[in-house]
Length: 187
Image (cartoon, rainbow, N blue to C red; front, top):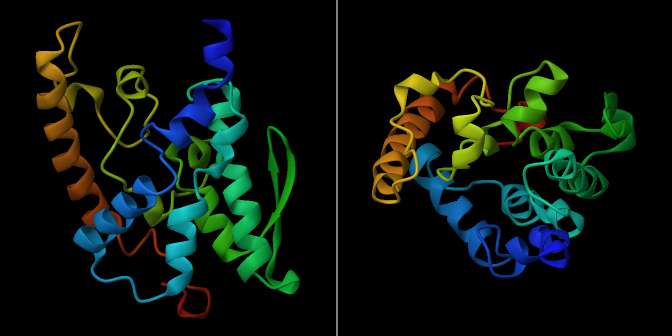
């Protein structure tokens, strides 16, 4: 069991919810539903790399899981953000020097955005949400009482998931303008 927990991030990327091929496709589909067609190819790269940091995580919900966003942010900054347009961000793991695309990718985590005291990016508005984090009230801006969180009975997970999808879609539409990076008309 201990060996399995060390692999949970890697397993999520290989066969789980963050699967390397299917998850970016699902994110792209959700983006299209929420915001319209993808008009900037850099978004496709962000969809592909935003969760790659899970590959070394022993668990998805611990400190390492929360910091998974940093790898994708570094990749996006290295690929698309000129050095002159980068800012320093102090994180729990050190200082990150990120440009607009790196920041966009970093802030797909509402938890990480709250940690830095900034708004999350539009990339955070994926349909899938982790039930445990919702139960713990870790998502700022959402009232846990607004969702009927299942308590032990798996039949209610689908109800919760449907409610979460509606709530997230409404939230994403309401926040679309505020959550869009604007450097150079990026999105």
